[in-house]
Image 1 (cartoon, rainbow, N blue to C red):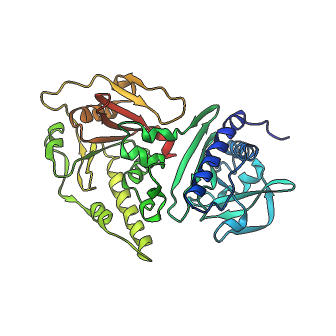
Image 2: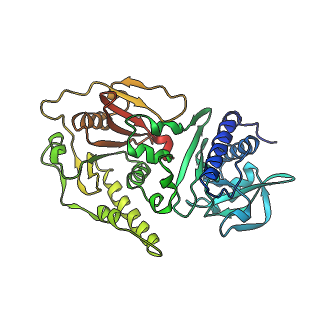
Image 3: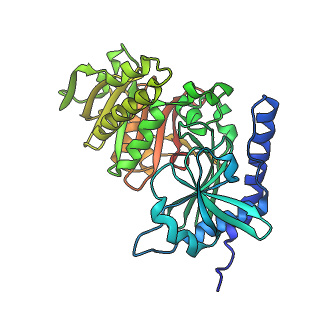
Amino acid sequence: MTEPGYPAARIVAPKVEAHFAQHAEEARRRGREVRVPPPDADTIEAIIDAAFWASLRREESYVPKISLVLLPPEAADHPLLFERPLPLQPDKLVKVAPAVERAGIHLGVWRNEEGLFVWGTARVIPALSIVVEVAAPGLLVVKHHRGGESGKFVNVAVLEGDQIKVVDERASSLPDCPPLLSSLLGFDSPASWIKRFDSVNVLVQLAVSMRAHGRGGLLLVVPAGDAGWQDSIVRPIPYAVVPAFAELAELTRDTATGTDVRLWQDAVNRAVEAVAGLTAVDGATVLTNTYELMAFGAKIARRKGSPQVEQVAVTEPVEGNVAATVHPTQLGGTRHLSAAQFVHDQQRGVALVASQDGRFTVFAWSPCEGMVHAHRVETLLL
């Protein structure tokens, strides 16, 4: 027996179709090559449906972790081809899942006269290729690739059971949108499609790494050369770093060309992992906006003479989201309250909060609203 259709796939497919059609047209207008035609709604629905039902199965007690990309084999660089293609069916996907569960490996899907099939695997895929990834049982992420070997994706939609979240591209153009949110959305500027600019975004990588360690964490980003942030920190700081740890700062100032690019990226990745790991320690990790590590395990306190933060604006960059004004304790526990207070007192700073349950919030001061703005961005980090 075949599984019944996944209703969310049918609902979201037309919106995803419109997204890819729009971006393919925009790419052509800018003179960029579009190697894979934008997908139609029926194909999108079929791929999401197969991925969803595969995500609910088990293979020897393991949850399948698969990533499906829609493209013909000739459009992939160095494809691995199966002698006998597999039908796009949940049981077939689950069987092959152990071979492709590592990051960066996708099962290639295309269509022939008999329907959709899996032709093999691909690692380097063209820009604007639609990817459907199984993040957890019943949790799917639809994204597109920006091309090249950088591994950068832009999330388009997230489906979890009957819940559908379509990313709102317009969020990056709203007043007071933090640069981190623009980078996460991936629609900030044409320059972001250039490999050198696209190769690394330190705060995005830090956010992803913070969320990945699963212990929760708080990262404060403060202006370089301004010690005012210390007015909001309990002294002495248990783990102050003297002199400031500057490896990440030095790497981001370096320029890498030719064969050195991969080595440089690897070095940045290691430095990011080291800094993000510190956020698992109770307290806040403090980083300057030039990426110098100042402290970790720091305790946040209300600045002398400053009122206690009573409300924050909260939004999520998904279609249909309505901004709300809430007390910071409604967003989470002590980390969220401390982060909101810090940004309220240090309006040039930004606070990144990862929860143990996977939620991720960016706190930044909003001059337009005259209050702290909490941006819920876990949808963009999956």
